[in-house]
Image (cartoon, rainbow, N blue to C red; front, side):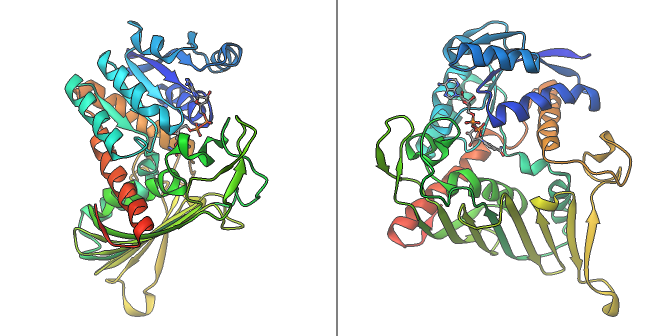
Amino acid sequence: MGKPLRIGMIGYGFMGRTHSNAYRRVPNFFQTEYTPVLQAVCARDADKVKAFADQWGYASVETDWRKLVERKDIDAIDICTPNNLHKDMAIAAAANGKMILCEKPLAMNVAEGEEMCQAVEKAKVLNTVWYNYRRVPAVTYAKQLIDEGRLGRIFHYRANFLQDWTISADLPQGGTALWRLDVAAAGSGVTGDLLAHCIDTAIWLNGDISTVNAMTETFVKERKHTLTGKVEKVGIDDACTFMCRFGNGSLGLFESTRYARGHKALYTFEINGENGSIKWDLHDLHRLQWFDYKDEGPLRGWRSIHITDGDHPYMKQWWVPGLQIGYEHTFVHQVADFLEGVAKGESIGPTFRDALETQKVCDAVLDSAKDSQWHNV
Ligand SMILES: NC(=O)c1ccc[n+]([C@@H]2O[C@H](COP(=O)([O-])OP(=O)(O)OC[C@H]3O[C@@H](n4cnc5c(N)ncnc54)[C@H](O)[C@@H]3O)[C@@H](O)[C@H]2O)c1
C-alpha cells in the first residue's frame, strides 16, 4: 500500500457509488504512490449515510458537509451532489486547503465556474472534474490517433447523447434523483447534464469551440414538484440541438434529448478528417471504428477495433487481450491518473479551468436557444 490519500465524499447516489468503487479498485490494478483511503462520507440523512458507509467501507460519516470540509484528517473532497451545490462546496473545500474532485457540470453557469476556478487557483489545490468519458480506453485512443495527426485536417465533428426516460408527463420534478428535472437544482436540462459530456470530449479531441447556434425545447411544460407537491413550470431543456464552429475551422453538430424513445444512454461521436474518420458509441464502448483513406482501394472500409490489447490505453492494467472492460472502469482510470498527479503535485485534466471552457459553451448554447442568434463562446 502506498501513502494514504484520505477521501471525504459528499453525496452517495449514483456517482457516489461509481467513485467509491473506483477508490476501492484502484490499488488492486494500478501501482500508484498514493492509495485512496475511504475516510468519510457525508449526506443529510444520518441512518442512510451510515448504511452506505458500512456497505462501502467508509471509516466515518458526517451529515453536514461544512464539517466534512473542515476536518483535518481529510486530504481530498469529492463532490457528488446536485449541480447547485458544487460551487459552495468547492470554494469551502479550497479554503480549507483540500484537493477537490468535482462532478460535472462544474457549476450552474460560467459566473459560478469562474469563482470556483479562482478559489482553487488561489488556494493552489489540485483539482479535477469527472468528465469520465475521456478515460474510456477507445476514446483515449481516439485522442492519440488525432494527436499523431492521422486524421489530418479535421472537417466535421458530430455528437449525440440520447435518452428516453422523461417522456411520461406524470414524472415529477425535484427531490431524490429527479433533481435533474428541476432547473433550480440542475441549472439546465440535457445541455448541462448530457451535452456537457459531448462538449468536454469534443474540446479535448478537436480543440476550442468558437461560435454556436442552438435550439432547445421543453416538451412537457409543467410537472408536479416532489418537495412542494404543486404543479410547477418546467425550466429545463428536454432537448437541445446546436451547430458550431471549432477554432480549427471544422464544423460541429450536437444533439441531445431525453425524448428519443428506445435510447437509454446513446452517446456517440464521429469525426471526419482529410485522411480518415473515427466513430465511437457508448453502447459498444470498447470498440473504436476507424476508416483510413490510405487503405488499398478494394479493401477500403471501416475497421472495428476491439480496444482490449495491452498496447491500448489503460488495458494492460486489466485482464488479457480480448477481454473487455466497461463503464465503471472510466472512474477507476480517473482516480489512478489523479493519484499520479498527486505524486507529481500536478492537477490532471479536465481541471476546473478546462471544465469552465465546457461551461462557457453550455451557457452560449442556452443563450443562443433563447434569441436564435449565433453566439461567440
Ligand atoms: N460523470 C458522469 O457521468 C455523471 C453521471 C451522473 C451524474 N453526474 C453528476 O454527479 C452529480 C450527482 O449526480 P447523481 O446522479 O449521483 O445524483 P444522485 O441524486 O444519485 O445523488 C446525489 C447525492 O447528493 C446528496 N445530497 C444532496 N444534497 C445534499 C446536501 N445538501 N448535503 C450532502 N449531500 C447532499 C444526496 O443525498 C445524494 O446522495 C451531479 O452533478 C451530476 O451532474 C455525473
